[in-house]
Length: 277
Image 1 (cartoon, one colour):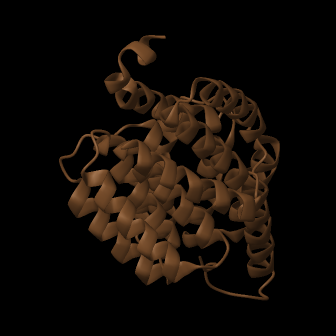
Image 2: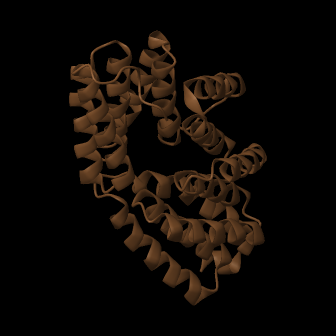
């Protein structure tokens, strides 16, 4: 009712809910729990004709599909969310939807298209009132999506330059921190990896279990592998996989299980080197 009386406040109200929505996606209940909320929000938004509400609900639906591995549907909804936020004049939601769309495209192998989307998300994030939340998310996606250990290290260097001295949101930094720890480990910079891992461990304490705790296990595993301990790395990758399974993140689960198998093979002397991106 307040928004109906003062529609100019709509963007600010829904912006305030973006971070809360992001936090809820990584609760131990998994993305399925957030999907129910998103569908309820969509029904309310459509009943009241709220463009901002519909945009936020479609974004959350796309995100739950992305995290659940339903990539084609995620891409459709995230693309729609980007358009809806743009049409509603919601800069922050537009930036986040575009960044998430890049993740979905990247997961389907569209590295070039994802790069273009991330450049657009970067531009939008810098112009958004929620830049402290969005910019670090864009850089996290850039580091994860870079080609090879060298590319990821360069993306991390660029991120550190731009983020230096900026305020960032702790929950929104988790994707960047774990990606940075992994990228540093694969590039052989163990001290840098350890610093990022320590930060990720601190922030992940905001969740009791869930996907971010699993991501920290995965980052620990990458660091142990870089330190030359494939046996311990393999055990940590399996811990990550099990935690991702419980959190309802099948793509992350599969990646961690494959890494665990590579670590086992490395321990047996069948392969050498660290896994690729």
